[in-house]
Image (tube, rainbow, N blue to C red; front, top):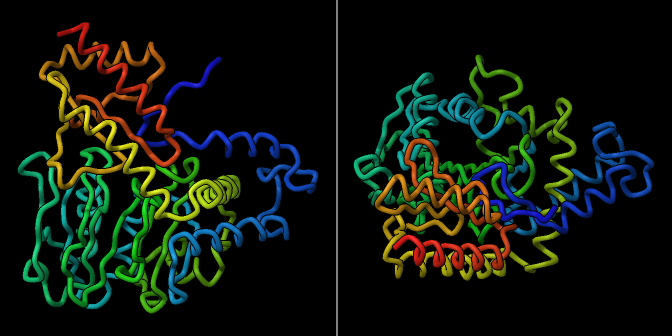
Length: 361
């Protein structure tokens, strides 16, 4: 059976080369006579895997030496609780910018642990833009400011970081992870669920400035204490070994195929432009995000008819373009064109959209 073009927002498509290599090594990894799924996380073989994954992550993101790289479990959603438990420990205050469902969920969870305020929101226009903020929008004594860098459901992305001054900035970068360069030194912490752009579900990568560690609240569960995880080199308990291994393969693929995140960004910009240019010219389909805040990773679009949207999704799936249905909270369509989506996939999707438009005009 031929592979489809998978536009899922996560779990998402993975590079074919990675899948082929993982398949070839599934019974015998690197002459060990065992699968990564079987081996001890305390073994020398796996220790090399996780260290290689960290080294590649540091190289690609140019992570400063004073940051820890953690491989965690619990999904990005577990960090909604872990972040206030670890970092809302000075004034007990935090400011959040609400740019979509995931930022909203993080905000609501953090409210359980302290004085948490929405400093800005784009809910007034269905999260179709990134709100502009100034330094005065944030409290002087806030322990941190929290953003969701790229909004998977609504297709917006931060082009410029909010001006938080000397306050700690924390970002969920789940759906734009490793898609382009990012100056990690501007953040106290960034984290991402790997299933959107880096690996299968089951892994969270957290990159945390070392001086922020060690002040978790007494009520913080041991598994959510970043200092404990850092001191144990992400091996406090059994980590998601297979997912970390796939993460390593994806990082190798990025380096070998694009050379750097600058090279990958150029690739992603070219890919997104094909789809956005068509949406801007189409008389049937239109994008839902203001142009200046458009994501390179998640492209929501609609027609003016729910019936036509449903027909398009059905016919697209039959033609091999799957998971184009928009999130249930917004409807319409969404094409997630993560790193592993080939340019060919976007080109063929646009060709199908043109044909659909001609047949349903």
